[in-house]
Length: 230
Length: 230
DNA sequence: GCAGGCATTATTGTCAACATTATTGTATGC
DNA sequence: GCATACAATAATGTTGACAATAATGCCTGC
Image (cartoon, rainbow over all chains, first blue to last red; front, side, top):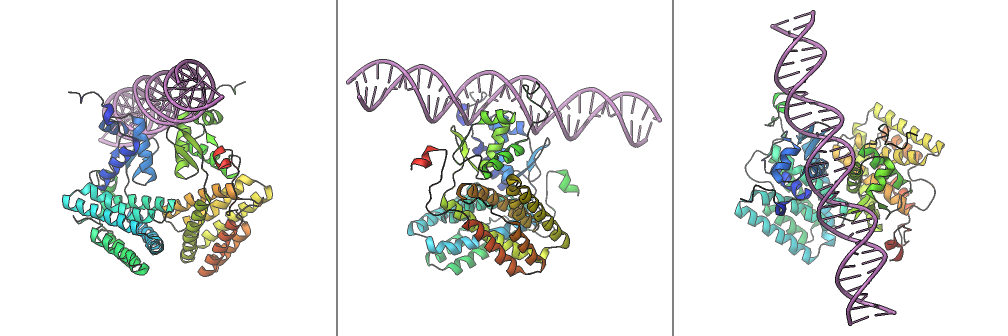
């Protein structure tokens, strides 16, 4: 009955809208190239176009959507080069992160990381894809956060968002990328104070993620004609 | 006469507004802590508040301004830790950049870098502080751009913007940071194919910039009471 | 005389209507 | 029959007015 009128209670903030779109992209419900019309989204989320616009603008900065002036927004279509670029950067940054982490990690930090991994296992058990996507990236981000460098965190946040998009596009297998097992192994090494070991496992972990992608010559399926006919 | 009505000809885009504010911050005309009222800025640039808002949002992402919900925006006040953090990251990134550059640099790239440095010299000769600020950062950015990695460029763009703010806050001396001489020396090494040498000079260059700052215990002068009385 | 609550004010956040632009469909001239 | 120009349409970009919110000053009660 009351669902016909706009519900004030479900008024999403722009961040919430952005996150929902992000999750939809990462979960492959929104394919690259999909046009994101402002009014359509405004209708979906029951908010004004202005707020949708904020969300889209934020997503553009994260590289998840591409906005062309006067032409609207669509889900970004990362190239293979973009993908390799992201993983190159992640390797460079995250190896440094774990190597530096062993010097500053405390017991409580380890515990919080373990708790995080436990939640990942819960998500795996519950077969909750959306939660797992969020948590998998969150683990890597949590590692960076422990270093206390604000924009190291910021950069990695960016890279993880782009990784979500890339895996959504190029992932072939049904299995998910970030296994809790490897995360646990990383924490094990960190707990043992083994900087090199942690870095090695992280490198291997990233390699696994990248290897599960088809970054060869495959043409990406897309709702957009452009990429389908080129 | 006609200056009473809004002039369509001088309608700045949000990027232009953002850049003007950025330059004002880097040029120390806007001190950290200064409140940036939307309507005030809209009046200054003769645009609507919406566009000012876009510009401020963009500047927030670059870390130049801080936006508190329902409280407005003000010029960020980077801490000493933030400053060290920025230079740490710049060192990590830019050393990699120059080291990798020697393998991909072409003659035309060198020429374009030289041309850039020539413009820096012009700015020095003309004593044009604003141009020099822009060009100095631009050189470092140009180096990263030559690697062709979009978000390596993006990250460095971020770091350079923050560096502008930091130098604006903590710089004591009247002299400017990025001398064209050292830029030339970097290009010399790159041209000679000396990766280690280029990295060494870049490291020295960044050290010089950081050393010209007072990152010790000095309290920053601010228009805001908060930082003046703590 | 002072503390706490209330009204005022200034500023940001939000929205809906309007203007502008790009695209698509149609008609017309060659 | 085809190409070009034009009109209709649908989307984005912009604006100004309105609502919500936080800071400030005031006033009353103790």
